[in-house]
Image 1 (cartoon, rainbow, N blue to C red):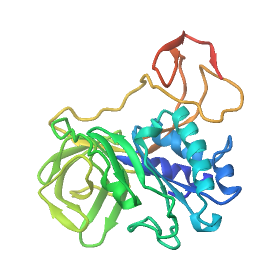
Image 2: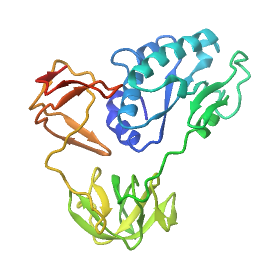
Image 3: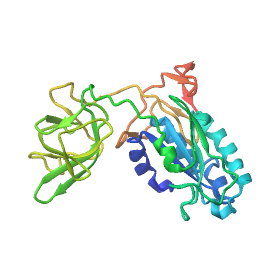
Image 4: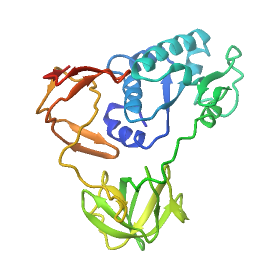
Length: 302
């Protein structure tokens, strides 16, 4: 996702579907500092990724060619970045830091010859300590997540397309359960029920889509106007998704001027949906790193 604040909505939609985040940090003098400043986008993206449940992180320190492949600059950024991702909730020991040059290709796929001082990255994973040199190796070292294919189907729509000769094709990532042709699905909260004609991924027909798959599926007798991004698709015969009049949410407050109390009306970003809501009451204030309750029924939070 681009780092610009105007695109944060798209960044949230994309990040809500990810198993691992790669945070690209610019190593140029002033660039890194701007990114991790109080309102910087590097800081905000890391916090959003963690908040949205992306628990694995890789940090690529880019544009190393612009700081003359400096080890001192690399170490300075690793130290600063480790401090702020720890505050966010990540364990820096489980995060590979890879110095790269996207422009020249250094340490992307193959080891760089410009940074003799760089001995490689290490990370503490589920199966012990893993080591490597390149960004590609760091991606290969991601711990595969558990795929909940035995749960009821939940598929938040990312987009809905109208394709000539085929019809309406909703697209999204299967979060839980499976989707396959012949299944009668329901879209909530639009309350549209229809049959799945076919399921595709990367232009190939699938027998079934499983959690983690980004699929497109063709549905019968549904107009593009009937369903939209943010709707949730589920199996009508197995615990279908329902809309909720109210729910309890755990939220993290980012750069908010002043204080928040009952009646506050923000835009809620939930999976791929962006929708206005209202805070009815504050139940408790908790420490985001430990999960311990700090205050019950607070009047306001800052």
